[in-house]
Image (cartoon, rainbow, N blue to C red; front, side):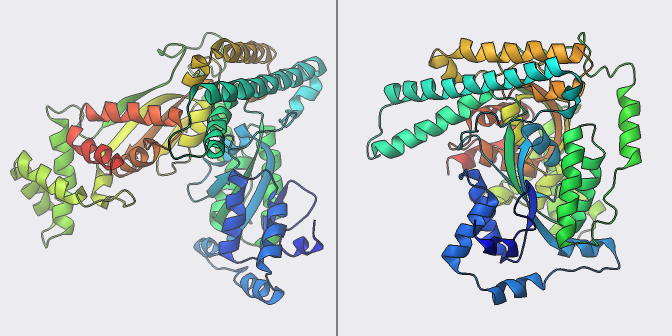
Length: 492
């Protein structure tokens, strides 16, 4: 590795480091590499330096942008930090990505890259139980072997069963099939599997996120938070002064988890009403619920905002006008609000006044995609093996379902063993990508349009495509006219 790299990273020998002294657009390119490249951020930075021939003078000018002293917390939002985080568990990455909505991520993609054998996190608490630690390591090694075997067999099956489309070169076709094999075989991997992330945020967002991470019940999360804090301070030494464990978060969590109804890991805890082979989405609440015509109530709320913002009437007047107008007028105003919207356009803000709350029971593989929608307020339960599992359809079609199910069951049995031994923290790490997790999300119609547009498109991964499709069906039961333009945009 070039000695010049020391000008751009805070260290060259540790897993967590900050990246600086580079133009913002170059850093964006380097972080984007993580999704498709097995190389580390430092290696990619070296490549960029060699290719772009960045001069020291240009880097020095960029460094002058840092703000180190401020009189109000909001000033910290002007100091941006880029952090490379490597060799952390998938469990850690999911926790980190929910700490603050203003953190920006690019994560190593198991849909494009093959994890390496032996790359998984071992909770330090297992050092006190050597036999269980050995079994934990054996389980993760076995899960990886299953993953690798499923990957190879599924790829072979797809090459034999999916013909090369007209006009597509065989090599490109096989690369596309390899991606499909990657994304389905990964359902056998556990949440202990290592991942890499590139994180960009302002200092204020980092301070908030670090406080939450340092208050976690997972030792890995607390340890890595301390490392992140140390490295972020390399770039913004005064702006994360108050990034410390929060007694309120810690004590309140302990209090709520000790209540009689909580029993988060009890063997007799209630199971989901799903079958054992797939997730679901259920609408819990929505604008207009309880009225004889939910969609009319939603349209009225939306349209009175449109009237207010595009007229000289007071809001009370707008409410009265919308209430007096008939359903045809309300629907017409709504249609005018979205009819010119292209695939890459955001809808008008009035759609944010129509709200939803939904419960999802989804695979960990799906959850790790869905949680990235930061405009949704997510409330997840802890990972578990007791809510069911998801078998990828292509795995079943290839006759490999029982092999994946064997890995799922093996993980489930060891999970229960860890729980029985009081090792709840370690148990979370052996949950596989195939296991289902319950989460509740609250969002608005504006975000629903984004979810449908992004996650139901032909290029979306099948699991999240299915679950957002099920959500759209649920909303369509009550607000069909509101959902129709979002679905129609997919064909545009």
